[in-house]
Image 1: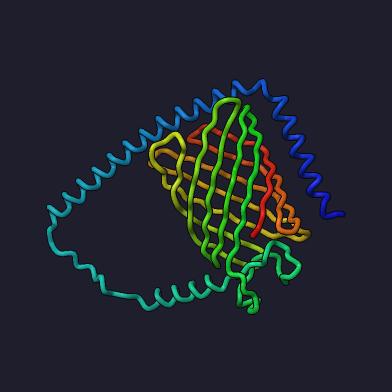
Image 2: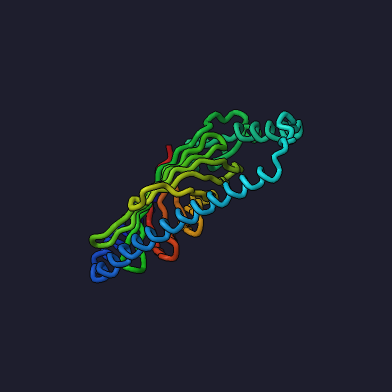
Length: 280
């Protein structure tokens, strides 16, 4: 019976959040205007960033052309040279990477560890992948709301994530999608990942480069801490997302209470969040 207490608590928090949404309907006009202003501002700054990028590309091409005009000699770099030390380090890293192993889900009773380990520590463990799907809703302090959906896939120490996030008020909304890949530092009860990829806003014509880091720390008592960061950068345009949550594991589910911070080149959306995740 005790294991259902967190579920009941989560449902109570969802109902409370719904009540807050209804009571704050008067701020809907303010939220709609903020979303309109954000979209207009990002469009202008993205156009300026594309212009800066094109100017920088032309400038670099001109500098390279000028360099070859002044020094047309052959390039004496030795492309055939190899460094045995670097090759050895690469082999050691690859051996570490493919040795990462995962429990069926956090705090699975069949595992002698909370979630992550390696064959060096537990040679009999065989699960070399992990998939987590999570969704959260956020209430912002400006009449807007947010929804974050994230899929995280670990293949040994190789990390992949897909992020979809929406921001909305009464009648206005916009959303983003980002796909990233990278590598993870896998330690007992701790994951730290770095990644890069592409980032799309639904009101822009082209993608932006993205990068970020995330970590999960598994604590005693069925709790784990989840921190997530994503950035989209193009010249002077900078977009940043931060999310932190404390999760309680119930079988394959995780119930989360957290806080989100989103900065769209100076337009900030932030507030508390509630979420749920599922591990495969």
